[in-house]
Image (cartoon, rainbow, N blue to C red; front, side, top):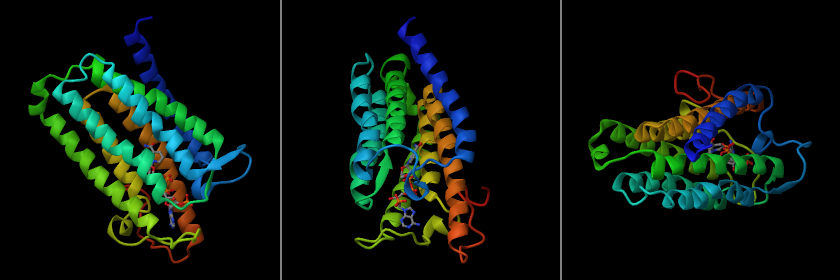
Length: 251
Ligand code: NDP
């Protein structure tokens, strides 16, 4: 089997995992954060869990990317910067901003780590080796539409995560109703931002590899947003009735 065939197989694997994730998460919410519960084996510190889980998307992605023969091209480098702008924050800055002392099942961390290994390889290898991004791609509207969506999603995601982090005073562990900005329309603007980012990535790279990650993100985060939304409505009788779960005015 050639490496390109292996790459194709892995991309198909990501689509398959996405297809299985939707029904699984509609019945069993991923057991971390507010949906944490027993029965998922040993646990580890949540901040460390995020760092471990997301680190392949920074380190392994970079190693795979720079092993590619197109890595020093202007467009591939731009795409590498885009990816890293999200994942350096997610792996090494975001964990320091969430409340200390939380616990996450090691099984969840192991699944996230394994997924990120595959996903980082698939995307980094595509932009650094198998894909063709000549300098002319800089004039293609797909690149700029994708970049625009990515940046918009990034801002929404960062702002929404920061708003959640600000809800708790030092030492607090409970939950409050988030208010302001997109929270007036949806329960999970952080997930909405994430969906826009990876849709933007798929468009900017115009690749099946990028599309597979966008589809997986939706398969993972839309059911989780529905679980969060239901949980908010059960926990807070005064929860704003007009708020949707994850897509303003729609879902
Ligand atoms: P959540 O919104 O569930 O939680 C984010 C943080 O905010 C947690 O520390 C949580 O605390 C805290 N928090 C959430 N709601 C409240 C509230 N109402 N009151 C007080 N504190 C609150 O997000 P996730 O942990 O699922 O995800 C974190 C980030 O990672 C998001 O930006 C998400 O988009 C991204 N992500 C991306 C994925 C992908 O497939 N691309 C997959 C998963 C996450 P606690 O932990 O105690 O609940």
